[in-house]
Amino acid sequence: MKINLKKILVAAFSVVTVSFSLSAFAQIPAELTGKSIKIIVPQAAGGASDAIARLMASELSQRWNTTIVVENRPGAGGNIGSEAVAKSPGDGTTWLMSYSGTHAINPSLYKKMSFDMAKDLVPIASLATLPFVLVVNPSLPVKNIAEYVAYAKANPGKINIASSGNGSVNHLLNEMLGLAADIKTTHVPYKGVAPALTDVMGGQVQGVYASAPSVMGQIKSGAVRPLAASASRRSEALPDVPTFGEAGYPALALDSWFALFVSSSTPMPLRQQIHAEINKVLADPKVVEQLRARGASTLITTLPEFQKVIDNDLEQWGKAVRASGATID
Image (tube, rainbow, N blue to C red):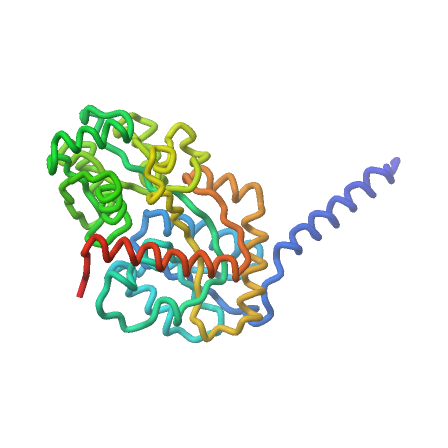
């Protein structure tokens, strides 16, 4: 029997290469070795935060060969889940899947909070950005923002815009456009974007600002009509939908970010190690594509860079909350 030495060497080299490649993505911080990790999502299952958290949990658990559990703990606009992480031990095993809507709005929206969002929680990685899209029922006789504003001015208060609750991102975006365009619409709060979107499609209300992942299917099917996206640039998943900035309303050119946080008592060296590993995952083309399919774009930053984004958003959204007059006791 002839032995093909060349094939054996190639196969052996391939095994070594694959093993090396996998190990480069499997460097779990020593402090977390042998421990399970919990990612708390402070919203109900099925939303953008939940989808991104589960994607990251799956990818990291494979690379680190450890158990990562996603736990949905909704309530109080995200404050219940956020508080649980803020008051957790700083050992790096309890993470918060947060987004700008919870993290940057709640400190100004809620009069009383039992923890300090800015001081008690610190980021370990930015993950993604995605736009909120103003979509309307196709029966509304408008095809772009200019026509929408003209129609709203001609019919003050007659356009009913749904939201997922008082002080939510979609509520505040509607208030911001009202101020910027000098138009008046009627706000109709719901207990989540899913029932709001259902009523937009049914014609009970005329529109809603919905995150791209939650409305991609309805846009593609023609069940709703997109007018503009709240983002600094057009979404790769929705290239034909202009931004509010392009439509003449730069105040709404706000990127909604999604990120992971831990208790501020977590040591910086451990935070930096976790951050470096998560950035490796975000650089994986497979993960980039999975996020893109959900209407999101990867957001890879350093921890200081992302802290500046958080600080800026706390100020911007705080102004929006105060301008809207929304408060929750």
